[in-house]
Image: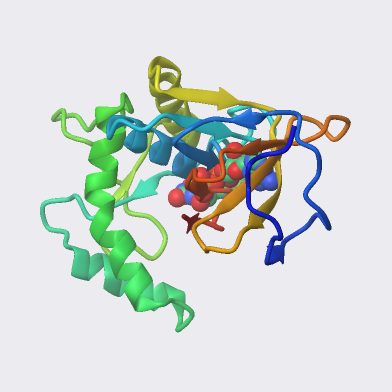
Length: 222
Ligand SMILES: Cc1cc2nc3c(=O)[nH]c(=O)nc-3n(C[C@H](O)[C@H](O)[C@H](O)COP(=O)(O)OP(=O)(O)OC[C@H]3O[C@@H](n4cnc5c(N)ncnc54)[C@H](O)[C@@H]3O)c2cc1C
């Protein structure tokens, strides 16, 4: 079965030709990757009413997120501020940082941390019951949140639980993204997701937005 994408394709990324598809994944949005980025995106999109497929190349938990033992930073302490966090980050970055990106990420961190908590993440608490903040590395103030020494695994557990509980999200494990096929218009994108290398790929509905959240290569194609 072929998907109804108007040939010819202007740009091929990996595969030379559009192959025969095993089937079509009908969904509003396809998210590639099941780490903190992928599951957070999937949950937000589902909350906005979209049907979502999360396709991930191995099991849901096989991510860098799972292995992140240390904590997660955010300017959430009383004496802290976005400006202080940005300044520390730029010093440690030694000229390699794009300040606009640093500022954008740091500005969003407190809301992102609150979002994780709203989805069931429990950070370690101090004796007074408030979230415990550690001072680490190049941080001039305490601003690192932990869950024991397995913060990433705890985050992924919480996000996985929320994902599995949301009927608008379907999870496709062992699904390797092999290619994007771009049509005449930039917003027309086909995604070829391969359940295993022995089987022919599945394609997405060509109008579906695709979020690539495969570890630091985040990119939105519409
Ligand atoms: C050992 C270790 C320790 C770390 N410690 C810390 C720490 O203490 N504090 C901190 O802030 N950060 C830490 N990090 C970094 C942190 O883990 C990452 O920045 C973060 O998890 C990235 O999240 P992500 O969702 O972008 O990517 P990931 O969690 O890596 O998720 C990527 C997803 O994409 C999927 N994928 C990739 N390619 C394909 C494909 N072709 N088809 C389908 N799916 C695909 C993967 O299977 C995975 O599900 C650590 C990382 C490691 C490895």
